[in-house]
Length: 74
Length: 259
Image (cartoon, rainbow over all chains, first blue to last red):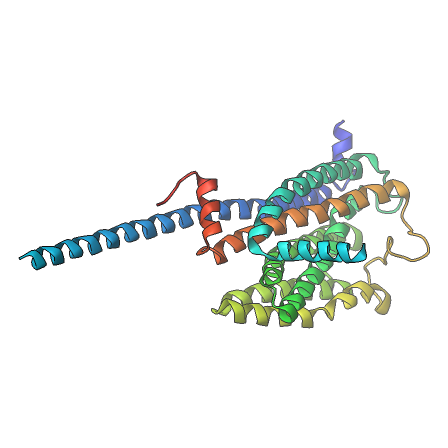
């Protein structure tokens, strides 16, 4: 069994090649998965901020309208 | 009949070219490509490492071929995909083609790097040198620089449309290098061994070695398909972030709703 992994006298060369392939190819597929997580989080925050701003500006307009109405009634 | 088929194909084409449909369809395809790639690559590696016979000249060192050659094929294949989609984007103004091109660049660079380094690791015991400045190695190194140049150019130009145009032109001009890589072993004297699989008459590689090589080659192609689609999906989300469908996707995938 150990002989099978020894690759004659070329073990270091063969295994480092396959090991490098695993590392490089692993990185290439894991990177977009990680990127997607951050992207979803960033977009979620952005949408949350925007919806808060919308509510705030809405409230702002409402309070302005109330003020106007109060002034008119005065 | 033909009209109906054409209408169907046009419909499929337009659906794929629309970012929203692309995102959905790519999401369904990625697991299929990914799992088939994993099965083929594991089977090919086991076959190549343990089952394929020892080479009578190179001993076990030749087993590097099952990574090296498919990676080198991919480095050229991905470059052609990148240049072709760049050209499609230039001619027909299809934004998605630019997305595919720019998503391909880092994957192509990774395969080129892998081909160069595994070649170097194989060259040391066989040629006695990590590196020689011969035509095949030099033109493959130029390919790596083309990929890196593409990525640098993309990040250097701020306007994304101008960047995509410049990158597409760079990719198209760089296609010149592809036949040089392929024929370099015929045109110049070289240490690098000649083609063994693509020869028209009969491949000069034994079937027991050809099978793992082809398993790895097809596995790498499917792997690239999964990788490029997942990168492209991210780019689509980023560029379309102000569209309502992206908001819906983000809400669905994070489970957080906004007013």
